[in-house]
Every structure is written in C-alpha cells, then in structure tokens.
Length: 234
Image 1 (tube, helix red, strand yellow):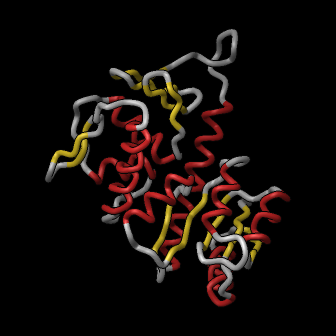
Image 2: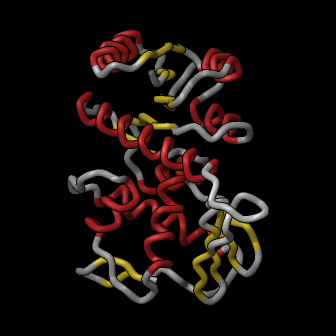
C-alpha cells in the first residue's frame, strides 16, 4: 500500500485530502508545518508528498529543495499562485506536478495515481537487468549535442549532465526518438504523464520551458521548437 505524506497547515484541507486518500486505498500521514514534514521524510517510508507552499516555519519551497538533495519521490505541490514564473521555479526545484488552489479533490487523486505509476515504472527501469557484464545494455538516444541515457535516465548536453524530473525525461525521450517530428500537446501529455489529456496546456508549456532553460545553460542552440498551432518538435 502506497503511503502519502500530506503537508498542509489548514486542518480542514489536510483532513479532506486524508479522507479522499483513504477512500482510494492509500495509507497517509499528515504534517502541519515544514519542520514536521522534514522530520516525517527523514523517518522514511513515504512514497509521495502532497505539499502546500505556505507553511509555518520552513516553507514549502525549502522543504522541496532540501528533500530533493537526498530523495527522488514524487512531489505534488499545492499553491494559490498561478503565475508561470512560480510554476517554472517549482519545477526547477524538483516538483513533479502542481495544482492551483482551490482544486478539485478528484483531480488531485487522479494526479496522485499518475505520479505513483510513473514512480513505479522509473524504479523498475532503473533496477531491471538487461544482460551483459554490467547487467545493463548501454542505450542512448543521440541528437547533435544531446544524449539521453535510457539506463540511467539522464540527459547530457555537450557532455554536461542535466537533472530532469520524471516528466521532463519522458518528454525528451519522446522528442529524441523522433527528431524533427511535431508532437501535439495532447501527445506530449499522454506520453509523459501516462494519462488521458484533459486540456493541461499550462502543464505542458511549463515543462517545455523548464527543459529549455536547463539545456540553455550548456549550449547556445535552441533545441525545442514551437510550431504554432501544432505543437513542439526537436
């Protein structure tokens, strides 16, 4: 049974999320401050975190930043802020997904399910044995200055390693499998999130923007091109 950490200082919202998680068959534990959240995470056993940003003491941004230094479990951020820059910053810090308050509890449960499935797939891929002396067959997708290692799930730009979230990795995997092909927002979302597209334009745009910024740190070339009215291509 997957265990979810709810980090939310509003008692009513914390309880509402807990009730919904229980109905979906998840175990959960609650924290009401950033300090308490970090202590819960240090104890281990958590498979996913639902994280509010506005917390007493240590805020949600700092919780996310510190946690990403030692763990790679999925984080779904809840925020009252809807600005694109805020979302880009969160994704850069390592958030896997975000929802703007107020939110629909059914949608949050759907996103929890998606992130847990992606996390299980990533763990399986990283621990699976493919044969050979080292237990893995080296596989990469290469395009100009980009190289995506399918075993380590890492991206190299001119030999420099770029840290990617699970969704960012899947997006680059899709592009690098078919350089030059235009992918719609629908196709990108369903591939990267392994879920039906429900008009999540902003989610796709923010992840693309985040990937571009990370690549741009190591090269002057623009690799992800916007094809207006159609989508994106490498």
